[in-house]
Length: 237
Image (cartoon, rainbow, N blue to C red):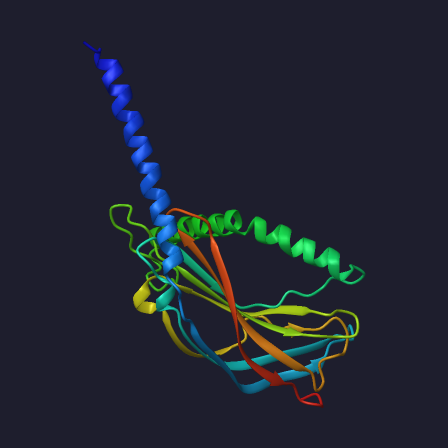
């Protein structure tokens, strides 16, 4: 007759194998979900278009942002971080090196985003202790339930003679659950569009929406969508 410890070891081994199988099935089930994100961005106003004292062009805009991200949520979704942004090629760095830099950043994105969310949780605790009920990142989480988050990041992309791709972050937003995954906002750009030089007059820019999906099990899913284009004025305002 087998001892108690032998039986316990058998039960734990079988349970671990079943758990691994369930996690694998959960991850594979996401491949059956084909989200269809409907997003539009309209420029309502060019608030400021000027040349800085450093000689760089600077633009701030008022945008009408409309997006439906509900289809990105599944039962396996833990966090969805969507973002639209622009990242600019550094001066003097070739395109191929810049692409490698972006890949390195993408490889670390999951760890970075997880750290950001953990930081927000700590900020929430501090703000709640201080009695700031209007703090926009405050969340009520009961029984350690999973938090569903969509981080929306809007980006602008354009070409210059120096760089084949310039990407600059304009606006971001956090969505806490599926019920809030429909966005309809008129917002000023949170971050100004600043060029490395004076190349923005009459420049055609593309608005791109990016999002990250962080599942409970499986790999992080990243996607993006080009939502609209806009040509900047020929003269400063």
